[in-house]
Length: 216
Ligand SMILES: C[S@@+](CC[C@H](N)C(=O)[O-])C[C@H]1O[C@@H](n2cnc3c(N)ncnc32)[C@H](O)[C@@H]1O
Image (cartoon, rainbow, N blue to C red; front, side, top):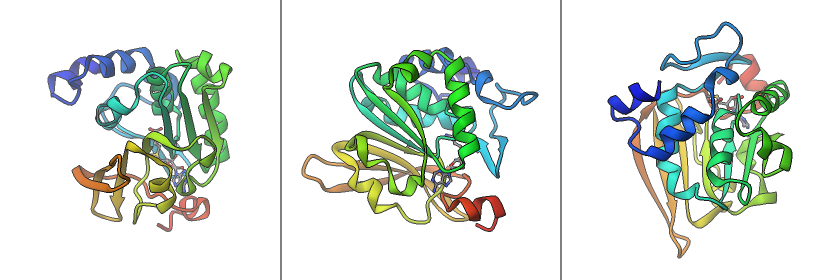
């Protein structure tokens, strides 16, 4: 899978290649789901595991803010796959928090991570997965060097901007029908710059009720 992503130029970084080879996607998909096909797959509750090329792109965009000892937040952590990748990148001296609003997915993601190469970090506590409304972030371990949002926001939540460290970066899909993957950098003086990386199609960042009903 990583070989193909490298061939197509999605992965350029050796570190991202290593991390995606270390965290086996096969442990993060429902039984019977093809794990290594470059496509999003249903995980129930109107949610998906993002396609490998999107995981790779987000890891590449955030790599510089996922150095050992840094703090990262994964909003809409779903299967826990990217949260596990982040945790291995920042290592035991860092802190990675996943926030997902479907309790059953959080319980499942903890099991998935527990079978993966990131299991020791979950056990030690430098990686944690929580039930919560990710639009509010997770203030306890803020500010974050890296924030990844795995669902599309109509507008960028202010709480997430507030919890980004000066010098930090957020990657977030923004929009309703037409969506762009936005790269938001908070400069050292606290000012914000925003650019669009590419067009994307994600499930909405919404309330639990709206997601289950499929009304967004
Ligand atoms: C594309 S899916 C999963 C992405 C995850 N990165 C993965 O690949 O497993 C997006 C996730 O965002 C979650 N989500 C949507 N709105 C949310 C909210 N307000 N707070 C927390 N999680 C939310 C969904 O339940 C879903 O699991």
